[in-house]
Image (cartoon, rainbow, N blue to C red; front, side, top):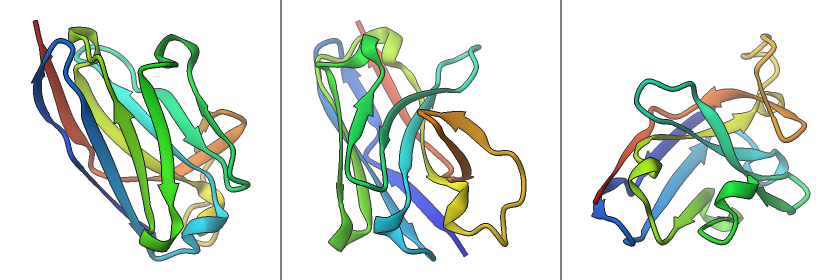
Length: 131
C-alpha cells in the first residue's frame, strides 16, 4: 500500500531555511506525480509545488524563487527546499501522491492540483516561522 512519510519540519526565524523530505513506499515511486501541500492555521489546504511523473516541476507563483521541489528516485524521496522563510509560511506541510499510484486502493476523486489528482497523503510535518 502507498505510504508517505514527511520529515524535516521545525521552528525557524524569519529568513531561515528548511528542507522537507517525503519518503514514499508501496508503489512505483518514479512513475507518478507527487506534490507538496500546506495548511496554514485557520485556512484551507493548498497545493504549493508539484513534481510531475515526467520529471518537470512547478511551484506556485507566489513562492517561486523561495521554494524548490526536487526528487531522488533512487531514494524514493521528494524534497521541498524552502529559503527566506516568512511567518506566513507557518503551517502543516503534506506530501501527496497521484491517485493513479494505486487506483485499486483509491477510487475517489482526489484533490486537484497542477492538472493531477492526489489521493494519498502523509501525516504532515509542522513548519513554524517566527518574526
